[in-house]
Length: 153
Image 1 (cartoon, one colour):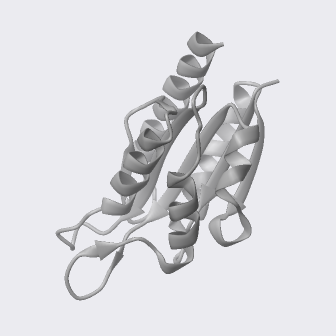
Image 2 (cartoon, rainbow, N blue to C red; image 1 turned 45 degrees about the vertical axis):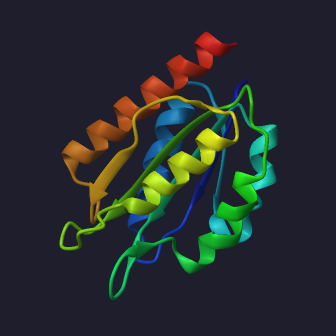
Image 3 (spheres, helix red, strand yellow; image 1 turned 90 degrees about the vertical axis):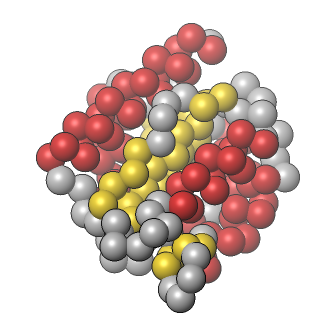
């Protein structure tokens, strides 16, 4: 049974909900899924997974959007890993009110790419809470991720 690890950062609950949607969908594909909040996780946990997923928000204060405070250490640790042979995907929520919509999703995408992992699907960026169209996008995201894992096996 393939193993998926989902790590999320959520201030409002939106990304916890996104992680839950992704988890449920992965289970339909026969994955053993472990989902954890970023402050309760170590990036090294991804070394034991076939599929690595981050769901994050972008903190927008005065100026540019930044990683959530609780995700900074995890992000720095992730950049140091060798995840060659693993498949990854990034998703998350943001607020289109800000110019820096979902930039933390892009930051994690770049960090994963630096680990040697294979990008399994295009990132999914959601405005605030997931609506029906977003859930459909997350289902397609999971389908593409699982297909990528299958072709790497």
